[in-house]
Length: 308
Image 1 (tube, rainbow, N blue to C red):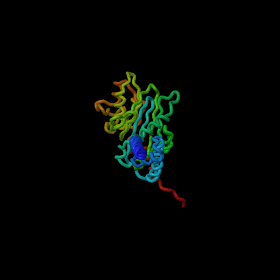
Image 2 (cartoon, one colour):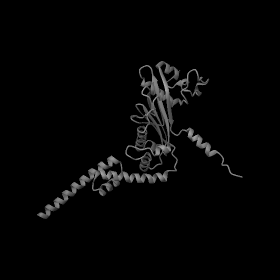
Image 3 (cartoon, one colour):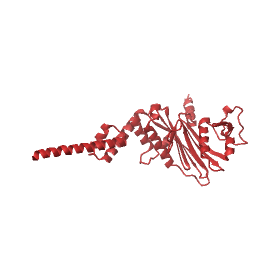
Image 4 (cartoon, helix red, strand yellow):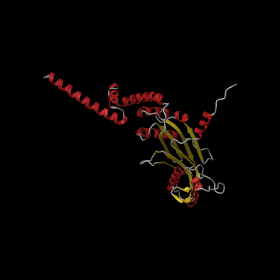
């Protein structure tokens, strides 16, 4: 009799243990996204301690990511996205590149963009007294060492994502804009995502600082951002100083360009009607050639001088 009860006890205990393990396994997989095999191994190694198992998985993924990053670092990254975030008087643009459009649309890649752009915004410099606006360009080397909230760096998070998606990833550049509270700051991307808050991603991005004498017109700000993306002005321009070009299609000064959403008006006419003034703007296009690219290209093309 005792033997039978003991066997039933072992059987019931084993069933409960298996049920608990399966429940923890499901939670761990859902939370981390890692494979069934890796999650099972993590739980076995740490006696079903969910917190320790998750930490171990992240350590393994980080190590694998750095290993893959080293192997893939020479591969071309011609795809990617531009991300935009505006929070009160701080705005950020960042370009992140990968190898294929498939990964550019991947959830992990978008999550990386949000992590990076949030880190840039958190480390943004405040304005100096008397300044209206501050615009700072951030290069790839600076961005690699930028700290993230979890104590890791941007480079660590890039390596982790490389381990997840199996492609080379590079953070190419970023731009940070801070404005005085009297200046309105807006940003957008194209194509427009379904949920652009807190971070909007697309192939193009723009941020714009502007003033309004009349009540603030947020719709106008977004329309001007869309104009910047679509018409690619090189500068704002000054009335009475910059003359419009004879061919409107070649116009690169923003105030003289035909307004994207109503070509019967120029941007300057739209601004006058709204009692608004553009203070500054920035535009990123994924994969575009930058001034730094041109400088590096010229340096590479220069012949090497040899002594005779």
